[in-house]
Figure (cartoon, rainbow, N blue to C red):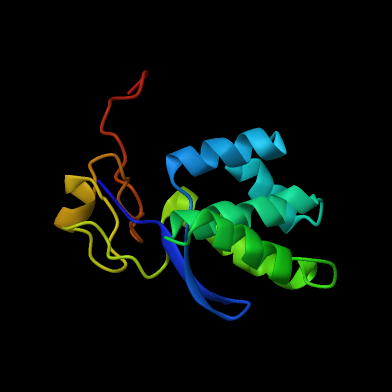
Length: 150
């Protein structure tokens, strides 16, 4: 399955495509000494470092098709002091798109909205054989074994 994992969002002077390819994720990992999920967690929990935000943006701009020099200039201009907290949601959406796909991406063929992969038993509508029947309101029948001494 191939998905674009692209996020489109306003940044600075325009709207850009942001995408982290495998190569860019590896570079981000080297630059931040953390994997993408750890960076996501650090940003979410407020433990981020400057490189977590700035390098995510720079590399994702490049992955989205922006020239590397323009990407660096955009980050220098729009990801500086006073901008960091406002950039957290954008960085989180970029990393999330790389990890699980963008929310507006087409789902793979055969997967409908709200549909999950279910076993044949679950999708047949019949109860499974391991499920016990509902208790009856009537008393259980007594065993007809002869008693000793009868």
